[in-house]
Image (cartoon, rainbow, N blue to C red; front, side, top):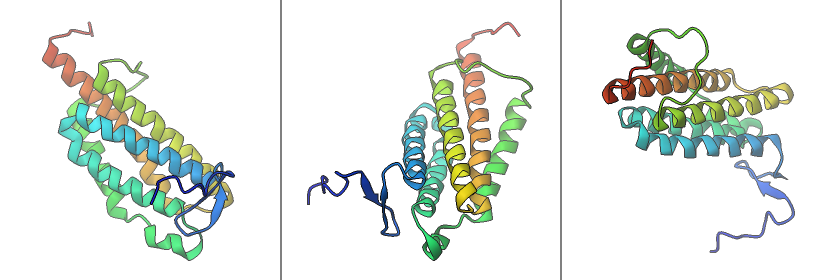
Length: 177
């Protein structure tokens, strides 16, 4: 079977629960942004090997979120995030804050290529969150989903700072602070 089914040639696609919707439907937009985040996280695993297991587990959760977003009615209840997913992010954030310290202020993303990639993941994650909020205004989204995506962007921000700090220390670069 060819990957080109031609089913989307007129601007519609099928979502997981079987309905045909326009390709610019908010659910399709959310899943596309989630897919973009998944791909960027896949690349980040190669730059941030110390975090690769954590990132892999996050990717699995994003698949669940996308399944939830591409389902309607009772079908989506099969994909509700468990509280444990949030606890994993909370635990990681605590660990990263212990390693790096709390950050007050803004940082221009550019410490190194790896930290810049983590920042790209963070910004895509923020867009993912904004698109989910758009859907939440018209069709209530399960609260753990919003909480997960919001906290994930915080964790990605800290990962970027840790990678930037770690690489600067290893390379002997002094940032003058």
